Image 1: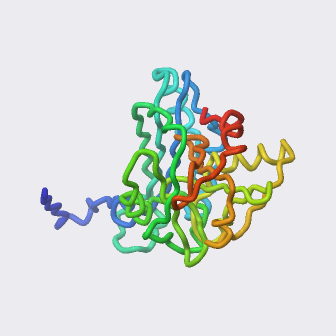
Image 2: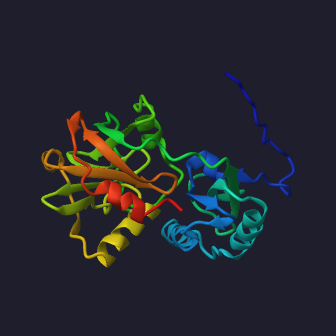
Length: 265
């Protein structure tokens, strides 16, 4: 354990200390994507997510222009990379309340572009549930402790855990879920909790364009047990077909086909 004491006591009131609310309260939001061949893949969807998150979390006067300019420069320098754009609030006023004089920090983190995961995953139920707050539903905010705990339940590289709110399956620890029942693709409603993923949006658009039957609906455990095919999605993975759900084998009739239609780049 490393102990760090931060002494912010001052007798000079003209020099108030600026507080990082992202670290203190998780007061912020982010998006995670990839750069491939010097291009920020699906950047419009990522930028739309940032704007929507800023509006929902009351980041007034938030603009994208400086971020977009930085991304252009980074894409010119880096051929392939993972990218995370994080926005948080900073202010001198202490406490939970948002100061009208709050400023915004943007951190752009680049990393090596990870290889796509192995061909199939095994889906198993997590013991960790999804945090419920309808006012934050869909937003990729900085409070991700439920995903942190759920991810610790993933024991191998080919596993993903499914998280629930009460009896309803909502998502994976790092992904959105799609299941097939009687040739209709279902994905959980995210009006109470969960994150509206970029790849989830792309899959739903593809379903509509291809006239593939689909529904955004509530999925309980009994309905999950009827699934004949399934996959999970996120921006780093793309589509990840599921080999089984809680040990019950799936046939992967269509999910591999969709993987070719909705690549991660």
